[in-house]
Length: 361
Image (cartoon, helix red, strand yellow):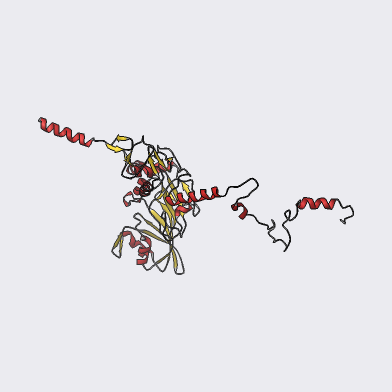
């Protein structure tokens, strides 16, 4: 090897090892984008993080951040609304019983109720593993780890999803068995579907359906191709996780040990899941969105505007007062509420009765 070749190789190595610009100066090339760090901390999605930065809500090492094209290291201090964010959070998974009539999205422009509105405020930011249609009920997996969500959604992962399906129309088991070979509907090829006819009652029937792909409106489209109308759709399991007796609209967390066992080392590695990081819930004083931040600001200003003196009650407390007796009956017309119409109330009236020895008993 001549000197020219040797020097060329060294130059290429130096270029590959060139450090990148981080908030703390020139740091390691392994630093991650600020939006990704915020998402991994359970605060928001990467896209939402970019919006927060543009709104002037994010600081790094005390300096206001003006662009999301920024990398940070573990040594950097990140603040949202002047409050430090947590480090990377442990990978977690929840089972949620989605009720019908709710949409699987963070915000719906049509004003429909979202699944996230039903979650307790104490939980960290979560994302759903796939989606369910507005009228579909049942098991919805939620996680705080975007990498895990992406891996579990992939058909290559091979997790079976089971549904109970009520259909209107006539169908035979022989027709359903043909779905195991896959079917094309309106140019869309659907993979193998295992369907069992459980019960028939009049023109309605209940089916048990299992599939691995879960394409958009897959069951409804396939059943429609067979001349059936889906009138109810309930997902009862997703991979090893079962809906069980979980009440509608409630959420239950999967234990970390159970989650690790069910995922296995291969999926854990593919997802980049982290079970060593601490469990940190989102601080209640950090708003999840600019809209919620504005709402919090409005509430604070209203509280400050009404300064109460000793003996005064707030407008909110006064609005809850009632003159209706405890037994639910309305007071007589023109009668004063008991204990309020005259000074002394009931005790004073009782005293007057005792001071009259000639009163009838």
